[in-house]
Structure formats: structure tokens, C-alpha cells
Image (spheres, rainbow, N blue to C red):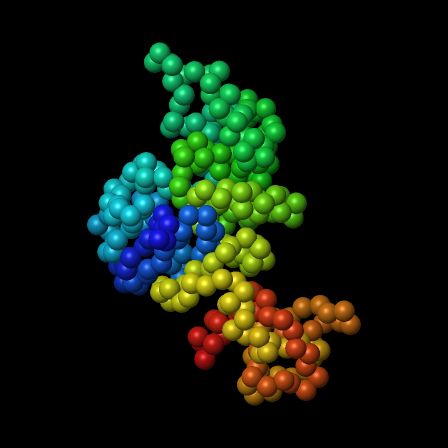
Amino acid sequence: MQDYILEMRNITKEFPGVKALDNVSFQVRRGEIKALVGENGAGKSTLMNVLSGVYPEGTYTGDLVVDGEICHFKSIQQSEHAGIAIIHQELALIPMLSIAENIFIGNPQMKHGAIDWIQTRIKAAALMERVGLTDDPDTPINQIGVGKQQLVEIAKALSKNCKVLILDEPTAGLDPRERVRFRNLIHTLAEDRIVILSTHIVSDIETIAGQIVMFKDHRLYCCDSPARICARFQGRVFQLPAGMPLAPGQFLLSEGQGADGPVLRVLCEKPPVNGTPVTPGLEDAFLAIYREEQT
């Protein structure tokens, strides 16, 4: 039996004059990390907003299924109650409040009708430990960096016992060390929940996601592993010295720096003169797919 926590069935969302999502369907099992990718305006943000209740039932068609039950979210609060948490690129933290206060915003730890500050700090510290934060729970948010602030948002989501954690551009603004720590954390969090990422940073997708949900023109283009997506272009990606004119049938993917100077990476069916075959990466595959769609 497939242990699906989340299913999206034939989701279509329209705005005046534009169809933002066109009959999108996919399933996610417990423990999976899925990445949503596509060009700007392809439908990624719209999909996340449907999942999180930002766009309530009635504003789209199709079914959203959580733990085998069709859900009818009328608000973000109903989505959170069902175990879905979203962390937007613009973090929803209050700068002057402490880490502990931010973790339990909207979910205060109460005792005899008043906030129990002792339990708030104790539980906040436990959640902070789970995400790798070692700061004092009483530290104001405006005294920690963006990377740590994102961890506070994740701790907040964990405080609500989320089954599905959605992160929008989660590594934007992180330094290289923070990005490595983030990737390690996501793999740990995905052991008992779903993690869905939306990002433009291909190197992060390649090292984090087990499957990629790729959008093109508001439709689901493919849903596959990074390795299988890259394998489609094996033997078709070559490196050329920069400055060489492209022959018919050769499509420029990117420009970069090689060991001996500037180089071009090109997509073609036949090995080019002076071309060196290279193993296609996920960025090559994305550029090739979008290039193919345009021709």
C-alpha cells in the first residue's frame, strides 16, 4: 500500500484572463522531499497557495487529499489544523519579540487562563534544539541573522505538528555554510513528514529533493527523480571552447569557466568538432527542457 499523505487531483486555478494551474495532479508519500520548479509565473506559487489555504475551496477546481480524505480548506487556519504549514520567502516573524514568543505566535502555552512563560521557554528550547538553534529562547528576533530566523519559522511549524512542510525559496539569502546545514536539516525533518520546496537554486534541488515536480505553461511537465531527468540528456551535452560559433542543431545552454579558460556548454545530437562530452547536471537538463519547449 502506498503511504500517500498528500494528493492533488486535477487542480485548476484561474484568474481573470489567465489559467494559473491547468489540471495539475501528483502524489507525495511520507518521507518524500519534492521540489517544485519552473519558470517565473509557471504556477508554483499558486500551487503552494492552494495547498496552504491561501486560495480557499471554491476558488479552484479539483481535489486536495490529505491522509486519504478530501479537504475543503476555507482558510490558512484550517490548512494548518490538517497538518500543512507553509514558510514563505518573506518570513512572518515579529522583530521585537523573542524567539520563543515568535515560535508560539497564535498558539500560546496557557495555564489557568494566562500565558505560561516557563513552559513557553522550555518547549521553545526543545523545538530549537530539533532545528539546530542554540540561542537563548529570550533572544529578540532582530538580533539573529536570516538563516537563524528561517530556523525559527521551521520550529514554529514543528510546534503545530505539521505533516506537510512547504518552503518557498528556502535557501535565498543563506550563506554557503547555512545552506549545507539547511540541507541536512531538511533530510532529518523528512523522516516523518513531507517536505515540499519551491526554489530557483538548482544545486540545492539536486542535493535535497528525491523528486522534482516541473511546471511548464501552468501544467505539470514531469515528476521524476533528478537522476532520471538528467539521464534524458546523457550523450547530448558537450563543452566547447568559448568563441567557437555554434553550428546548426547546437543550442547554447550556458557559459562558464573551464580549467583552460572560458567554455560553452551546448546541447546537440551529434558530437561537435572540438567538443568534449560532459555529464549533464540538473541545470543543463532544465535549460535543455525549456529550450526544447521553445523550438
